[in-house]
Image (cartoon, rainbow, N blue to C red):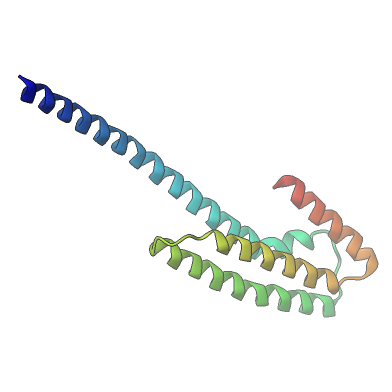
Length: 136
């Protein structure tokens, strides 16, 4: 009788434990998928940030060329960083450092873009940055 109770308790414990593990599995995968989707959206936003920051600013031809060069420089860096982040995800390595690096790149790009503008243009640029920060 004692063996029977031990077997039933063991079976119940095993069933309960597998149910908990099963319950955590899908939600953990969903959270991981959400995180990957958000990271992809962050990289996409970074690649197009120059357009939003320069919205409403009339650039000279020289400024256009400079802005295009800055955007291309950072586009290449964003692509490289995103590839590194995807590789880390596939290797099941932590990827938080990549989001920090992404933020640093975005700040550097903003700074370079701001540097090619006149004081009047800077006011509009700063307003675009402030509006962007309020949204997200």
